Image (cartoon, rainbow, N blue to C red; front, side):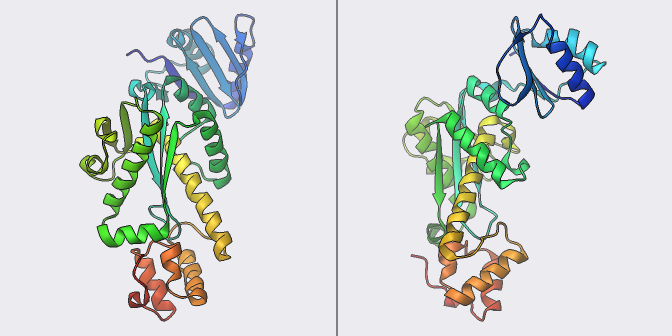
Length: 315
């Protein structure tokens, strides 16, 4: 399949030169959010975003790049492009990703998101990328709202709260198997809304058969793919942002219920907050707020004068 979508990062001088060229009369202005200028010519759409990203799409994209961008703006020929179109990324499929797996406090959240060619292009225009590359929680929350607005019912989320998580871990005693179960539920839930979705992609965290075994009738018909760095796929990137937003929201709700600002991760700061919480409310509070198989649990309990024997069984 011929590549017909290209992305470039331009410096300020290149942005100014591009703006000057695209302001010419041969280009038809278009209304695209977050762009400095957006235009079209025959079989080619060109968007210069405020971030400095230049997106060139269409059957005539390579011709415009070769005879205009490279010769008049970049002043060099590019053998490869910063981002080239991956044909599979634009075909109908869903992406699945999780948030909270490495955090002591809070739930495990798994999200799934469906895309097709039109949705991928809109997600790209929104700047959707792997949530781990988004440093601000507020940006992630805002972007998640935009993604939900775009996708409508073509996304799903599974949240395994701390009490359920601890009960499940006591039975399964394997985080990857729990993750596979959550991925399978996220796939099944989205198939209820998009039953014809042919493929599901996620980051590789364990054997694919773990997810396959957890799928029910609907999910057994879908093609399952896992790969490292799957977050580069637009569907997985969208799912990663939705999952992160769900996790952030859950921490905020927990903070309101327990009366403290819940920190992320498993750092010394997290441990100190957990120690204060246990000292005030007793060891059982960890079953409602934390993932108790973490070694952090033993350190917290020991610091406050308890041990795992003082934890009630998960229920």
